[in-house]
Length: 431
Image (cartoon, rainbow, N blue to C red; front, top):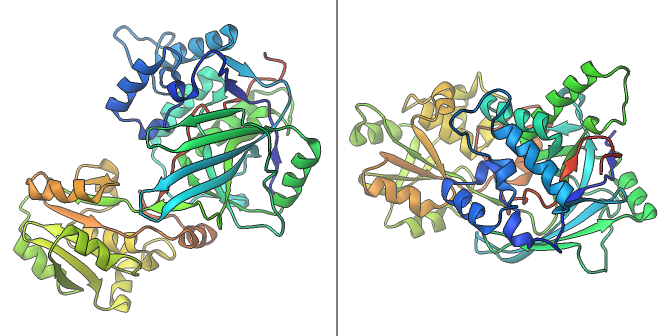
């Protein structure tokens, strides 16, 4: 049974700082150029906490995590950050122009503390695998600060009744992010509205869209705190994780494709690769990237390609014949375009297996198809592959089957700003 709870969020004090200058993209989406920009915007920009830099002379007792801890406490003491007086749910609207050309959208969400559950409990489900290094980094930051600055993005199937207690007052905070997305946040403290949201989601199952690493970190942190506690406390703050909850049928929900380039393959020969490819895929030449993407749009089991000879649309000749390649793969992989690419081409024809994918020595991921295509044109990559976006219902089906998609299968847009609400896991008596 799902359990969502209001909490005393920590928010930036907009009387002292401008929200646009202090909020950031999620830590794993911040490029070095973005980080430098954030640092120049404000001495109170969250990047100083969320993505600190290592310095010469760092030790176990003095490092980027302890500096983050000290900054967080200092900003609370100075009033740059304020902890809400009352527990609240937070209503979020994100208005944006969809990058897929589908026009203006508004995505609506509810931010709450969600009770943590192991995957096998079947209440919160993943759809992608995680890597150990990002989890170690997030754990060190969580231990140091005792707070969660970033949001876990969760989806839920539409319940029988509305879950979002839409407010009509002025928003508590408004911020425009790096991509022109307008974020508006309201605090919901009305007990009746909070109870209605809790009841409507009580039977829900939550599917993680973004934030798998942070969720697993929160689980590990919970288990550490349980082991250190004198007695069990099922309502302790560490039993929950801050999450942004979005209805799967929300018209503002957008999933973008993530494209791939392949490089550093020894003895790669384009002609030989093409000769192998045509054994299992129909290869239809395309005159340009725009024509290729148009031919792919809305289709199932279509993969775009750019090699040294030009663009092509790839269609599996016989899906049943490909099934043999998925004999030892997770359930339902044979239904996914991204898995057909990974298993039927990257692994079967190019020798890039799961280990080499994790090492990230051959495959690079791109939101922008023109950048991927350009790398092949300039010789910096040997191949580029283009995909359609993964359907949200495929995400649900994979999670329900207790399966996991290949990495970088989904790109939910827009991202959730870090710092828009902070969840302090220390006791509520802390100011």
